[in-house]
Length: 230
Image (cartoon, rainbow, N blue to C red; front, side, top):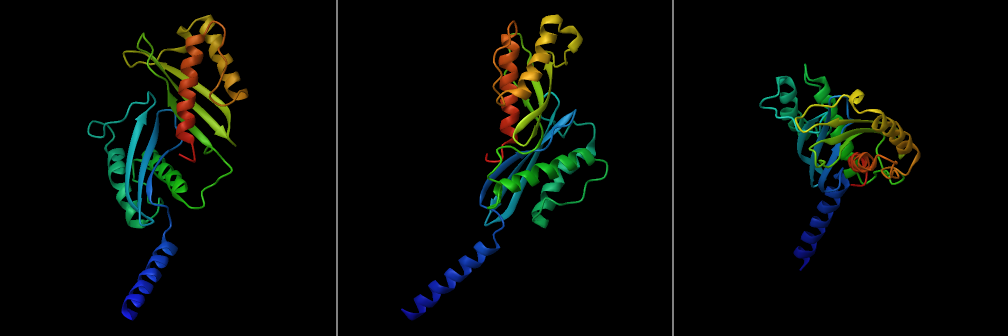
């Protein structure tokens, strides 16, 4: 009985020691980097026993289409996507050296993992809903085959800037000059309303119901990528 008590005590001490050294809460955490003009990065971080166990990184174009590293014309970016996660596990940190020739991918990778680790932290912020930054989102595909991609800039849980583009069914980006007068006005009206309205909920703009609905969906998608609590 005495030996059992000593064994239980040893297990308790070991458990408390593990908890004390656990830096993160176990689980799987997803996060996005800031979106640039041409791409955005996504990280999935696996935490086991309070430690970084694995990291998966994916990168998307300005059309919100995932990049295929086997055919991507910049091999250094593919190398960064494949190797930086292993270094992060080894270092138990998002702070790793940038891969030469792949500064953009490395920077997005690091930022996305840093944000995922904030989500995994027992001390993550509770007074904010969103990360500050620029987040990309996309709408559903319309009946005519196009969809909208938006860049939403967030500061202190508010939208402070917005831009969008229409991706056509053939994968090309429509020139805004081809929109014509009503839609061009609606685009500017939506931007103003997005900044001044509840994030993601702009009232229907007269004569541009489809644009408003698709833009709202894309903005909410961007906001979802910016969430701290998800």
